[in-house]
Image (cartoon, rainbow, N blue to C red; front, side, top):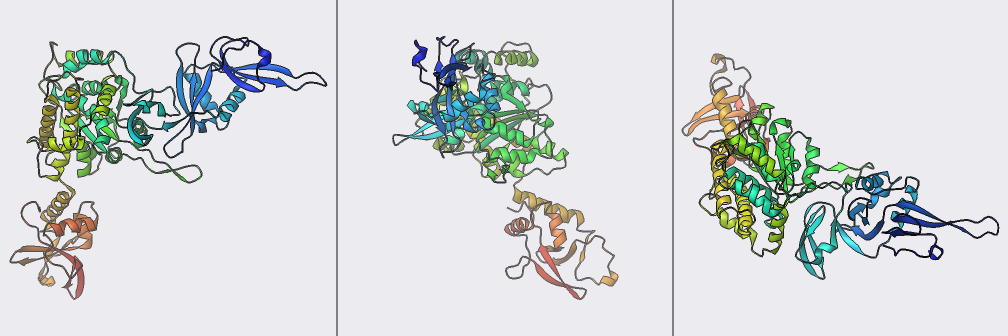
Length: 582
């Protein structure tokens, strides 16, 4: 920031200068000191144009790949404190209208007749300092003086154990927007909200899920997710708002009433924290399955720029907390979609049916509704502190967190040999670890083991609600078994019978013949595809072969050629075994 001038005649012209206080030129602000060309032999005529409130370019910015260049701006609106914004340089394109709109939204006053000069000032700025531009919230790895530093970037603050926080800043087109607003204090949250979670496993579980986001990167995971299922007005939404208070206010909670593309943008903006979505019934049942896959995989759809080149896809790591009156499978089935095993373990259905709706302990409130209303009121006054405090502790924790995950996984509550149950258990182990670490750090006020017990109860609830969910392998075998049981007498006939004395078979699926080991069904290719219920033929045959249901084959092919009525037909010989095919 330039010193206050005392002699206007000694100011370099042409030049830009910013003054924090009132000067001989007038009000505080960024000025252009120019001079008009003289007429004849006259001296150049100086002029001074006020462009905007005080503003300076503190540093140049770019991301780790030397893309996404920008400028770190510092400015002082007439009302309020100094503010900073890492502005992407591409916002200077055209007239710079988008850039000016963001600055105006943050309180900067701009001379409408000087906007071209303001754009010129920013376009030619070449600050001496340079910092990394983080274009998403969450963990970033920096190498400073040959030492790797892990920092957590948020829109208005960077959490780090060293001066690395000065080397990176959050850069976004939307300067004034911040999901991570804080009100009250950590101590007030502990007293007014954290203490009320104790004795309520679902509230403990919800808060632990909100805290699980920062652990994803540190434990080499991509996502984890829970879906609270229960009757209307039983407190599910209140549990979500309590979870939202970990990172921000009640507005941190979103609804499912959004497109898949819209949720991609929200997930990217909240990376390494928690995406909280209320009422899955508002989502399109035809799209919700693919949305779950997208959110869980952590990468958005590939899109093209206007010139046809590939645009960089959004990326994120996220913990997902959802609610609804129906399970994910129930919502998809109602829309005519077949739920897949991978979806069911990316978003675990947890029954929200406790003593008082979602609650067990009412902490002196008359009933569940009064307790929910009290919590809703408290989260508006105490929020946004627990999440950052948790990260500050995590940064200093030198333990092997992946090893802690493995240790928790071997506890009797979570130990299982079933592959899908194992994936569900791993998700809940991560959530349990987040809650237990926060308790150990002295952040929650819960008793030791309370988050672990809540996660163990949730796993039991998941098993009771949807624990019979099948792997793709099991789904294929169940579909083939059901097809044969349903059509074995009506769409098949004995391959060795005399066609002259055999009733006409309509919509034939194949033939059968008896062997000492049991009846073998010879399915035509169209029938085997039908029996797989939408699974790919190769994937289906892999499952059938692995289960030992492939009764015959010719060399490497998994089909056989059978002579029927004077012609050779390509058929698949299947003997359905008792049991589940494992």
